[in-house]
Amino acid sequence: MRFTPVFGACVALAVITPATLADGIELSGDVSVVSEYRFRGLSLSDKDPALQGSINASMGNFSVGAWGSSVANSVVGADAEIDIVAGYGFELSETLSFSVGGTAYLYAGGGDLDYGELNAVFTYAVDTFDVSLGLAYVPSQANSGNRDNTYIFSSVNYPVSEKLGAFASLAYEDGAFGDGKWDWSLGASYDLGFGSVRLSYVDTNKGGIGAAGVVGGISVAF
Image (tube, rainbow, N blue to C red; front, side, top):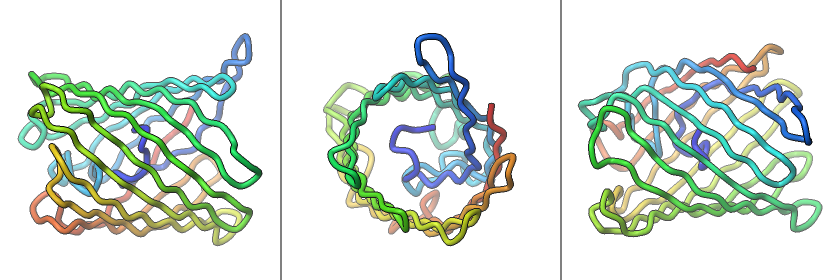
């Protein structure tokens, strides 16, 4: 899944059961089916269902992984997206944590589309809720039209009960991939024991593939 996970609101079920390997390395992954692939409020599957999957390895504060999704060639100009992610996170206090990382966005079946992005996220977490504020930045590069891009995002997660959770997000994007674009979402997730289901209302201040929609999904973890 994308390192700025979540704020694309491509709603999927994600329950990860890590396997501990040699030298303290933990491996996890999932396979998901979503009603559509939303990235930062935009439907990159042209509002059609998408198949997604991820594999991640972590050791201490470090993590690396890969995430992939089918996309609509008519929207993206490619048949599939593969993200290579890496990150480092640490605690600043009992309630505040910070992470930095990077994502390489790669597109199969498309030419001159790949690009890199850097990100940083602060998270404040207590027993009753958590709040995150982050920045994803694309430096000027050939496949971003030699322009940079800034995406500022925030989210709130609230556990309604042991199995039911509610979440909301709000973000602003400007630059190569967004011209004063706002996106927001509101949804809920439910733990089924073997996994969970999620359902979200997603919208932007843009029309077309950014028009309001309800997105849901389910995944199987390994």
